[in-house]
Length: 135
Image (cartoon, rainbow, N blue to C red):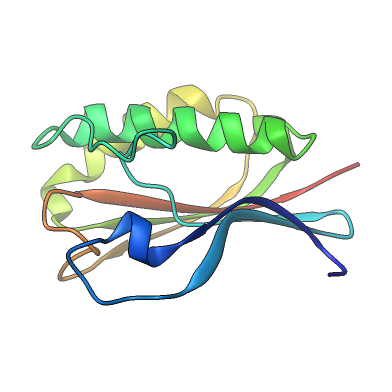
């Protein structure tokens, strides 16, 4: 494989209630570019959902995951260039953006925010997708 794959997994383990069998990973380092899988409020070790019903709490867990994964890729939050945020309800925007804004203070990435009908699990209220660039 040409690219570095961080935390490979199979979807049958993440979504046991669904009949899936996809080999994925949490991050790919391709040259100097880092692509993170969309992060949700799920513990990366146990796959337990965190802060169910709490958009700000979910955003905190999402950002913890992003910081952890970037660290495993040899990067930090300061390397983030692009953030795409998926919300299941526009009323969560302020709470989620406040949390992300605190974590990304001084970074100045570009943001795209979308409201979607649903995410992969009904208890997930926010998902964040990140692209970062190593120096």
